[in-house]
Amino acid sequence: MIELSGIVKKYGNLYAVNDISFKIGKGEIVGFLGPNGAGKSTTMNILTGYLSATSGTVKIDGIDILENPIKAKRRIGFLPEQPPLYLDMTVNEYLNFVYDLKHCTLNRKKHIAEICDVVKISDVSHRIIGHLSKGYRQRVGIAQALIGNPPVLIFDEPTVGLDPQQIIDIRELIHSLGQKHTVILSTHILSEVQAVCDRIIVINKGRLVADEKTADIGKAVKGAKKLSAKICGEPSKVCSVLENTEGVFRVECVKQSEYGSFEYIIDTDSGVCVEKPIFFALAKEALPIIEITNSQSSLEDVFISIVGENK
Image 1: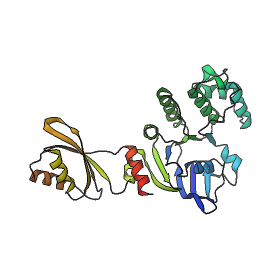
Image 2: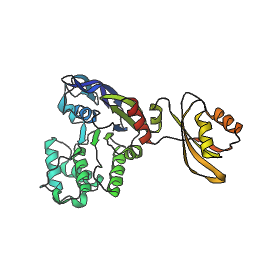
Image 3: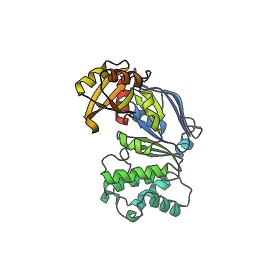
Image 4: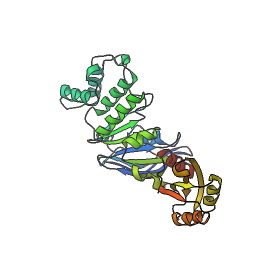
């Protein structure tokens, strides 16, 4: 559905985007992440046809956006970080304006009514946009992106500035839209990505540095595996034994646990099986293990590690 191949964007000698390539299939919800200045907005502007690339190609549903921009753009619904709203219009006036702007050919009344129902703004459709809360304005922004029923939806920071309940509502809406559309979600709220997205793409300094399913994003961190363990004994002694075990590079005592044990987070080299050496090293010092399990890193941990590796 979406294909970027060798995208480069240069400003003089500065690379804003440097050789980015990826494909997104029909029905995927993809989180697009990166630190400030990584090239996310530039990539999204190229993807939507707002900017041209220095080199490389972008295809939407098989259509090259540079060779046939109007046809390609009709397949995209875009919500920028600041929704393009006319605050002195009513919701209905604005959506009818967007309908005309997009040269939509679907039944006007039925199509707009269906969109209002999907994004839950039917009850405010006759109100002036400037009088709506920020949450409702975001919904109106999403509604304009849905005009024409485009197969691709691109949302840039759709929940910024919203309260917790509004964030949950918008997440649920995006998740439901993913059943009929391909969705790209750019955001700094990592919990949002984890809750909504099937896949995560990370860029840093204009380069793609990770592309994994959400459940497997930890694989993008090279040389890192995290264990959680409950071990009896003096914490300073346990930490000393663990830190001197081959394959272990960081140990943190988190809290006291049951049966006189303490809970530890152990960072290890993913290329080394450390469970047996840990067991024997602790047994030698009469430090019983109550429990040891793989501990999945949070998305925040993974993101920081990925970006840190590519500084």
